Amino acid sequence: MKNDGMPGRASLGALWLVLASLSVSTLIVGPVAVFAVAYDSQTLVSPAGVTIAPGGTVQLTATVHPGCSPVKSCPPLTGTLSWDDGDAGGSFDVTACTFLSSDNLSVGKCTANYSGSGIPGLVAILATYSGNSAYSSSSGVSNIEVVSSGSSSTTSTISSSTISLAGPGLVEIAALVGVVVVVVLLLAVVLMMRRSKSPPLPKQ
Image 1 (cartoon, helix red, strand yellow):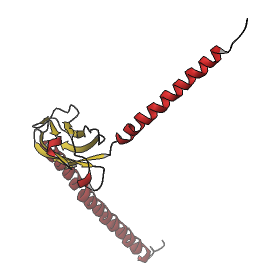
Image 2: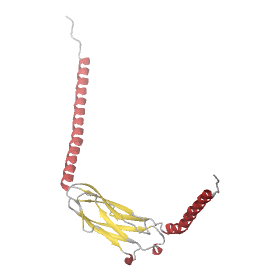
Image 3: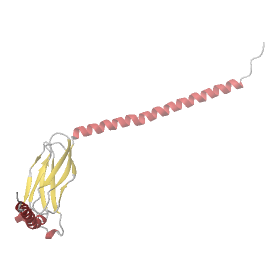
Image 4: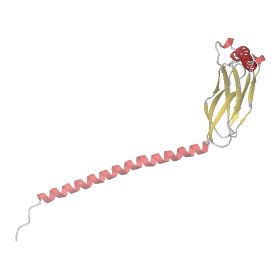
């Protein structure tokens, strides 16, 4: 059977079409991908750490900083910042803030009042910025310690009592034992001296 070479030419033509399509895709998608690269963002929460009583309230402020400089030349900051206590049982009066493009923000801020639960313990409050087409997402943390004032004062009182009993009590006992030992040694020395100076008994 005669082979006229047509299948080989067809294969080369298909390969050329694949390479051409990849080149066109690179030219079209490449610049879009470059311009879609987001700036970094940084989210900070203040106060970073605080102690409250069970059921107490603290005001938290999250600030989102853009990762470009100068700030005035950065794209507007848009997106959402949300609060979360990791199911610790507390509550926020503002659960999230939305930054709109119409706000034309260079730095985003969100303030919320957090009420702790009635259970003592350490709570990590997480503020998360969603990011947008220009900025990557980021998170900040505030550590809130819920402390029961009653248990805290009881512990301090017990600790102080233990220190006062253990400290001066042992010192006084040790001093008294030392005085007794010295007195006993002096009496023994005196008795030995008297015996050595007494005259010998006459022989019968």
